[in-house]
Amino acid sequence: MSTNETRTRTIIYLPLILSIVLIIGIAIGKWFNFGNKAGIIGNIPTFNKVEDVLDYIEREYVDTVNRKELTEETITAMLQQLDPHSQYIPASELQEANESLEGNFSGIGVEFNIVEDTIVVVAAISGGPSETLGILPGDRIVKIEGKTVAGTGIKNSDVIKKLRGPEASIVNVGIRRRNTKNLLNFKIKRGEIPISSIDAAIMLNATTGYIKVSRFASKTHDEYLEAFGKLVNKGMKKLVLDLRGNPGGYLTAAIKLADEFLPEGELIVYTEGKSRPKDISKATKTGGWETQPITVLVDEGSASASEIVSGALQDNDRGTIIGRRTFGKGLVQEQVDLPDGSALRLTIARYYTPTGRSIQRPYNHNLEDYYGEVYHRYGNGELTNGDSSQKHKGADSLKFKTPKGKIVYGGGGVTPDVFVPIDTTGISGYFSELVNSGFVNKYAFRYVDKNRNSLKSNYSSVATFGDKFSLSATDLADIVGGAEKEGIKRNETSLNKSRKLILLQIKAQIARNIWGAEGYYTVMEADDTTVKKALEYLK
Image 1 (spheres, one colour):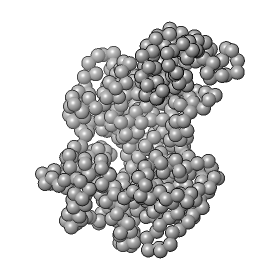
Image 2 (cartoon, rainbow, N blue to C red; image 1 turned 30 degrees about the horizontal axis):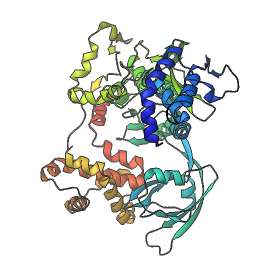
Image 3 (cartoon, rainbow, N blue to C red; image 1 turned 120 degrees about the horizontal axis):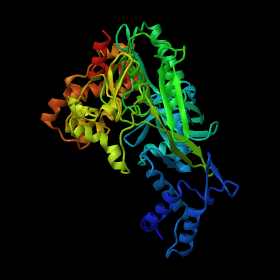
Image 4 (spheres, rainbow, N blue to C red; image 1 turned 180 degrees about the vertical axis):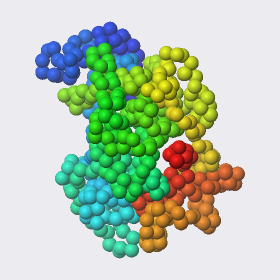
C-alpha cells in the first residue's frame, strides 16, 4: 500500500483515536519503551489505552497500517488541541530544530548560493575550517566526494546534507576558481560552526549604535556583549536595538538581555502555570546600559522572547518602543527529549510583563487562523495606519499602568509607543518578482564576482561604500535586460515606481557579498523609515 493511501485511511480513524486521547489526557504508551510499566515523562505517568487502540487497529484494520507514522500523527494532532505552540518533533527533525537555539552546528563553514546550477561560496566563515584552508568567496564547489554536483539541479537542502556532518569527519570537495586552470581539491575536516544571533552591530552616526538581534539562542547574551563592546569603543552614546522579525527563543536569553538595560531590582518578567508556581525574574546590578538612551524596534514578526524584552522596557518606562504591534506569543514551552530521539515541546506556563499583562493573543484550535492573523492585520489597515491596533484596547481589564502612569495594553502583543506604518514605497509586482525569483541575489553576486578586486580597492570600508557607491543607468539597463532573459518581463510603470528600491536592494546585496551582514545592514538601515524614526527620538 502507498504512503498516501495509508495516510488517507489513517485520517478516517483519527477522530476516534483523538477522542480517546483527549479523555485520558496526555498518554503515550509502550512505543516509547521507558523500561518500566509506569513510564514517566517529567512528572506525568503514562497509560496504555492509546497503545491498546493502536494494537487493535494494527491487528484488525482491513489494510496494513504504518504504526509509527500513525502514532506520530496522533501525538501531533493531540498537541494541536492544546495550543498553537505545543508540538511534537520527530527524531529526524530534532537536530535541525535545536541548532538555531544552541547556536552552532558541525560543518565546513561556508555561506553559499546556488548560481546557474552551481554551488558558489559567498563567504568562508571566520575561523571555520574552510577559511583556514584558504577557500575564497567566489569559489565554485563542483564536486563533493568525487561526484559532480554542478549542473545537476542540486538544491540548498541537498548541499546542507552533503556538507554538514559529525565534528572532525572529513569531506572532500573539488573547487573551480576564477583564473585558475586546474580543479582545486580540498580535504576539509568538519568543525563546530557558530550560528550568530547578532546579524549586525554598526554605527548609524557618530554617536548612535545599532544592534540587530535575529533570535534568542544560548549564546545571544555573550554575542551581544561582544557587539556592544565594539560599538562603545567606537563612541556609542545612544543605542537602537532592532528586534523586528525576531521569532524569540530561550527565555533565559531574553532575561539576560533585558537585564542589560534595567537597574537592579526592576522586574523583567514572571511566569506562572497550573503546575508551575510563580517564578519572578528581576534585573541584577550587572547591566551595562541602564540609563543611557535606547529605542527598541519591533514589528508583527517580533515574538516570544522579543516581546519579553520590549515589554519589560516599556513597563519600566525605559526607552521608547517603535514600530508595529508584535506577534503576541506569551506561552512558555519546555522540551522533553524522548528515548527514540524525538521530543515534545509542551506549554507549561504563561509569561507576564512587569505590569501583569499577558502578551498572548487569543487562539482557538485553528492553526491557519492563528498564524494567518498577522496577515489579516494588513487587510484591516493596522499595518498601514495603526487604527485597528486600538481595537483590543476597549476593555478596561486590558489596560495597565507603568510606574510613571503610562497606559499599556494586554490582549495580544506589545503595542509600540510610536507607530510606524509598514513601508510599501517602491513595492510593485515587478520588484517582488525580481526578489522572489532570486534574481536580485544572483545579479549582485555576478556583479561582485566580476568586480571584486576593484570594489575592494576603491572602497576601503563598508561605510565608504555606503556613502560613495552607486549603480549607474547602464547598470539598471543591464539589470532589466538580465531579468528579461530569465523570463521577468519589463514593466515600465512598475520599474519607474520601484527603480530606487531595486537599486538599493542590489547595492545592499553587493555589500553583503563583500562585508557580510554588516555590509547589508549598513546600506539598508540608511534608508529605513523605522530607523529614521528611532534617530528622531534619540535626538
